[in-house]
Length: 248
Length: 111
Image (cartoon, one colour):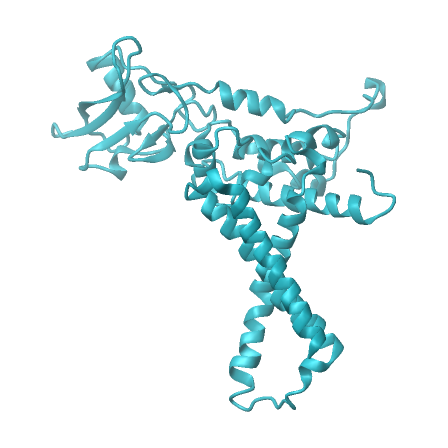
């Protein structure tokens, strides 16, 4: 260990006590195999028990520990101290969200938007259990599989400049998940998602910056989901206008 | 929510088609008129623009990228904080593309 230390400058905000968020510096033992989350846990356990942040699985599955690391949205369980050492590391709550306390953000806007795209399989009529499973070919699975990898970590919302400026924007993850269910051969709920996905606040507010895809830790590629949704909804729109039997 | 009756798919469709034209046709056209003709790789009578299908080609080549520009420029200006005047901006951008389309049509018909 050699007594080497890494310095983390962490945003602190205690409602009722702080007017605005401030930065507090902490020194932790430098360990080559520590991720940022290990350093935060060290601070919580050994230096300052009042530091608040979300985490759970520490293995890139739960999506809880997203924070700004030197200004970039990251899962803190997936970034090593050694990637920055010996430079100081700046840890801030995810931008574009209200701060509840320290590194904990209010995610209720995202959860409302997620629910609005109905991210579950919708059937017009359910099959009887005795009729067996809904079968799918490998091709039908691959049409949406990549988008099932989303862990709702909200890094894409912190990275999206459109969401930063237009908080009503449905946002990358919610659109990607709406698209995921639209592409599922077992699903019949496309129509009921289009009012939300196809609205101005849905796909059309996206200006294809592509940062959502850049920061996604699970390679979901929400930007692709948004652009493909634009193509599909545009095709439907032209069909409905140009074809006499198209339904408006 | 704008929903199904929104005109956004229409403008985005033109933007998207214009992007395809700008990405695929424009480079080919630059090679043809910028290199192949002046360097004598191909010969031209100078009257090709009077052929009806060349007129259609030129119409697509010139007008669709205008809508690509209009849509991108409109959103870029919005992102730069000009959202407060977005209605006049839309008129200038998309109206500019429509004016360019009308002008192109007029030139192609009259030559």
